[in-house]
Length: 152
Picture 1 (cartoon, rainbow, N blue to C red):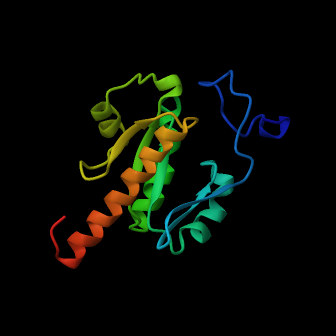
Picture 2: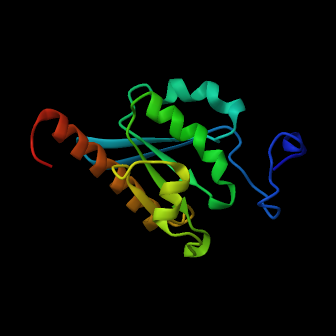
Picture 3: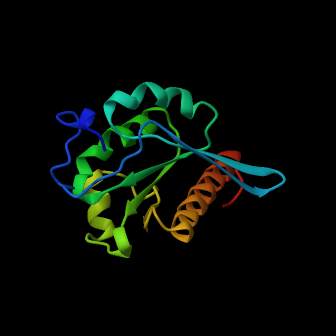
């Protein structure tokens, strides 16, 4: 984190935070020959919203990564994806695999419906983040089957 964020980013709930995504992360995961996931990670601060419309063009879905210490920061992302009717999952980032809140309590606090997948993860752990992406892909595939009229 740099001094440029002082007075702009509120870190009151995370005083030990020393790093952040500067602008955008990118990754690519090849599942098989016909399924390649392109991953774009952006910060949630409003000054980065100009990128969001471009990034969701052609997207199959999104992950809203939630830090329960700063839950209010997630509302804008959830509203953004809901307004664009882009499927999303909510991943609660449990640092060191410690979950401080019940999933149902977080669901209610975020006011998301029961159809939206809610999963715990540690965003720093490869296997944990893989499960989040699997959850997203399965959710999107089930939605597409339902819209096509075939059973999930």
